[in-house]
Image 1: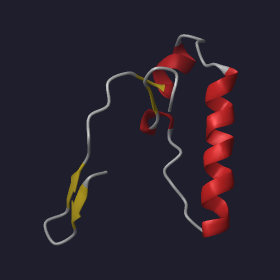
Image 2 (image 1 turned 120 degrees about the vertical axis):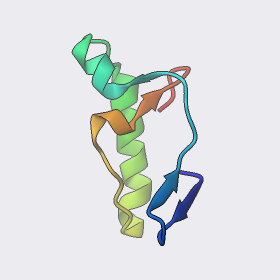
Image 3 (image 1 turned 30 degrees about the horizontal axis):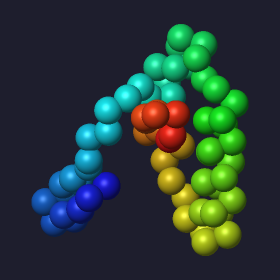
Length: 66
């Protein structure tokens, strides 16, 4: 996310080229490293009481990095 305009209800996001985790699940192409990356993200965010949208279409894989 690059910017948010609450008054006008606008969210500006950056486009990231790649497949969503959702698409990779459908094709049975999810790698263990993607799961490990999610776990590492959780280890950082949970102690800070930050929750993110874990919906599979919210995660894009680009060069094997979420």
